[in-house]
Length: 627
Image (cartoon, rainbow, N blue to C red; front, side, top):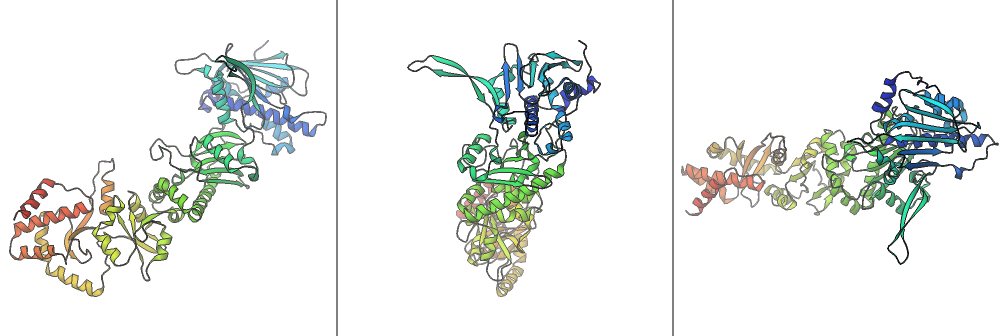
């Protein structure tokens, strides 16, 4: 029997098929099962148009047979089978797709969901086997043929015995190596997992003989029995009519497929028809995974094409700010590369991703409106990610995300949206006020917060490190600008109060110049203020970088340090102001410097900033107390 050469000519091409096109060995089983499914599809289509064929749909199946003793793995189907000529054409010519030829030659078959299209999936078998044997008998022939190959050196075809139409693909597994155990692919557990992962929704049953062990009644002795087990679900839950799927079934699907122990907060299911038709089933989790905010977390949706898993995590389908969403997309129209592992035409994915973004946003808005308690639960886990979406996009995603943000409010001591804040604003108010700090309690104790609240203005309390950066990128909301209550530009005084304060600062400019001598590198200036009520001193920020932003940036692992430009404001109506004037007027300049250092240290501590020389400040306080 003469060995024939592959018509694609060279060993190099087959080597490329085996070693370069596919990146993951385990997908060989997906490819061979998909081929078997296509063969059954072709037969079923023929039976619909050829009344001589009496085919019962429930008799059609794919079978997987592991043989540990002979180290073979067999995939069989009772589909249309292949003649000698078809074996020669389909398996003897690399990149010749019998499925594609079938669709091209049958106009009415173009709507059939045939998976194969490139004619290379079969050759993935050589990633795990050093010899492949194919037995096939066509529905149109009484003869069966055996095709066999050990790889690029060619193949042989001869007649053989086979009962019934269909195809058997027998893989003779490679010898194990130090790095790879090919025996793994003979284990029941591995086979079941791979089918569940990649081929769970093949429309025909995939069966395998499995060994089950049970204990005898009233005995510890185990009895082993062999039984047929169907390994795939066949009908995807997202293809069933919505009315036929219960919430419990969705929840079970979610916890099983996405390894979560809690049911999701929301379920989003949709179907889109058009240039690129697809179905989606998305879930908004009820809590963040343990690694969600780590570099190890991988976002992405499962991507199916015609019921076959193509990618376990297609990251292009989700923007980073919605990376918490779990779920899948199933489309027959997505253009895949030759290995069906990656995508070819980005515009299709971009179009789907844009649509998904809109759906997710609407679902979150609905949750915010209809179930505030559930939304606040969601926001505690994923709110930072929404803020990051605005910050990292330099505000370009503001319109998508701004109405999903929540901030703690001084108004009623609970979370509020920006829209709700604006609706409550005083007449004539054009600014949204906020304050930053490590905790709500610390923010509430800030001197600047007390004075703004006394003026009757609502304040947003920002406790997440990304909060202020987010508002800086947004710049405004509904035409209302944002302002930190610690900003030196904040001025809620009346015209009369402004004039009185201006006069007081003019009169004290020499005092401030003297006080600042030892603080030249620390602050940009010293001034009196009348907005501190009972507090003696505070720091205000000058320029774009606030004190809170300084703290955040200086914790970054870059090693770079930044410093906010600050002004020390002293309460004009506090007794300390008179004491400072007295010291200056009496030329007690050394003591004036001691008071200045202590006041500056106080101001830093109030803002949550470190004091560079706490021992010196402690000694100064003790000296003053002992006088």
